[in-house]
Length: 182
Image 1 (cartoon, rainbow, N blue to C red):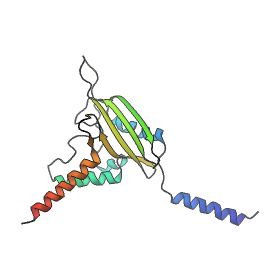
Image 2: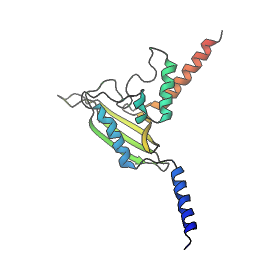
Image 3: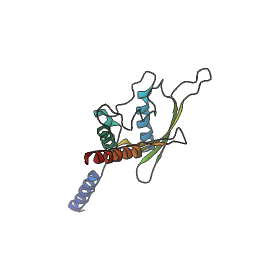
Image 4: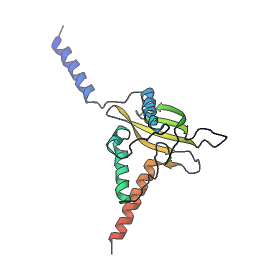
C-alpha cells in the first residue's frame, strides 16, 4: 500500500473541492428562502430591507449594485424605478395570503420560482388583489439570493426589475451627459 500516493490524491481532491464556489442547496432550500422572505409581509409586517445592509441577505450583489446606481441616478429626494416594494409588487399590504411558490432548478444551477399570492383577504366579495411574480435566484456563497423579479400580475404590462433598473440608469446617464454639454 502506498500511503503517500493515496494521501496526495485525497489532499488534491479536497483542495479542488474547497476552491470550487459553494452552491446553494436544491429546490426545497430555494423555496424555504422565499418563504422566509414572505414571512416579513404578514399582517402588520414591515417587509424586508431593500437598500440597507440587510439587503445582502436577500439580493444578489449585482442586483444590489443596480439598485444603488438607480438611487444615485435618481438624485436626492427623487424616486427611481422603485416606487414600491418589488417583493410584494405593492406599496402597502394587509398581509400576504394564499402564498404559493413553485421552484425549478435550472441546469445552470440557478433557480426559477413562480410566486403567487393575494394582498387582501377576501372580504364581502372584494377583489383579492392577486399577484403573480417570477423570481430568479442565484447561488451566492452557498446561499440563494434574488437575481431578478418579473411581475406578471398585469399580463399587458409585465415589470422586469433588472431590465427597468438598467433602462432607468442608462436614461439618467444619457440625460446627465446631455445637460453637462453647453
